[in-house]
Image (tube, rainbow, N blue to C red):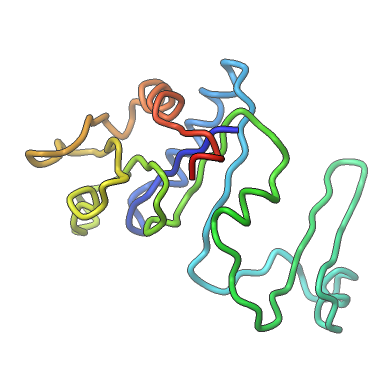
Length: 168
């Protein structure tokens, strides 16, 4: 299993880019999983559903299964948030894991930058940024760069720049 990240400020287009990259990669026979970090409280469950009732009653984990999919939700209940390495260990083996977020962690990343955001570039402060994907040319000193709309080239860079999970 190899790992690479997409890092950027909110609104830069990470999720939009990821939705283009996954079909590029899977079309080449690459199995892909994603790991997304949320900076806010999120809920996959809906009030009134049995799984939500189980969680609200105090269950630490709730596993939901059907003929089409299964999902395991774990409540931290005051425990610290698991780190990136611990979360990666929970994934089934695949060829490539693309991490969205975790921009402060020390894994290799491609920075996603959108000029209209008005946010600073991340690469000057993060030596783990190996390339940038942007809708504008990056400043002097940037690592290799790609246009944000060039999904095939960015997908190739993801495969080339990813590292084995054990290297993290």
